[in-house]
Image (tube, rainbow, N blue to C red; front, side, top):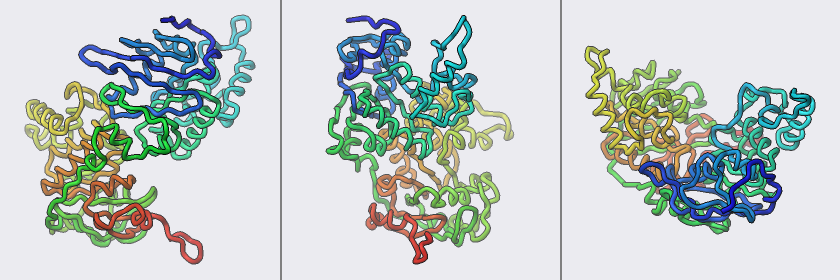
Length: 516
């Protein structure tokens, strides 16, 4: 086995494939990777997919030199390697673009690009030469970025471009992206896709880790699936691969089993919305949600779904109309009123509006129910707190080392389950779920769906907002469709298909050419 030499030129790698040979990685008590073998070819974008904990990020850390494998090695071109540091990896033409970008916010773009090898004259940084080299690196990739701008002032998308430019400036031939679009806007995603396509066309080996199926089918030429730290299969021809086949391979069961739809009798009206109007709604809304029903709410961006939820949860006040909860009129002046009535919201942006990032899993579960179980309304009952947190963690299968673990270290799916545990700790009549599985891997989605079905079976009315056509069709008993602040129609489960839903969700053109 040849040992990698630090700062070895990457040029010899040009045109070489990347081969993982029997890669294994063991941590105390955990086998994270077990005998991983596959090849990624130059001139291709090769996706790595699997549920959280499948081993994708661990493999990238081995590729990037952050972890030393317990067994096996890497072969790039005609050389075999075991990287013992990130410097080893970089020196052999490998770059890993992580979710948490490795840039120094207080330094300029140019300084970040050449950190560690800044051009100097007589012991001083040659600023003119540094700027010229930085402009050359950014040309055609991020021409609008000023090399003298501090990285901390750039958008996340721009920082990502700087990270890519930094990798290319070091002659990277193997470039790996770990969930690169998780915090990007649609425009930034389009730009990143174009750049990745360019890297592919230049003959780079590109690895792409993502939970987003649409991105994988859009940009990737091959996909390798992992499960529980083991290699499952590589699909070399994306044109013959379907969404359902890929999901089945990842989770080991059929797509319909993932949604796990179960018919159930519909109960009495739980929530009646009559002529509701407020911010974000163009026309009055009227509909009913029944006990034991999963009511889907579908629409494209700007349809007004989240705005409707803000009215139903007391975050915004209605300007017209009325609400009835189980036959009694309900007036909401604040979220506190909605929570007291049993209307509970899991927001779309769980990191900003759902979790308390610095709090533990237990604190996030107990926070809302705590006042009802405190002595004299202010003294915390430690035994109840522990028992309730343990109960919800067990019931919802929240994957955490212990209840005291800071919730920010959990995966998106487990954060979402902890939020559900918060509301299951309280009396609930209506559950509002805004994009409940966005950014969550397929296995965690299946667990969330099971929780939703169990809640409906217990008599709770569940209203689910989703932009995922397959999801909203897969779990809903009925589907309401919104478009630009207007309720456009209702479809039964039997009537709902992609064509019918999109026909209602897309804006209509009037004879005068104005969208309606």
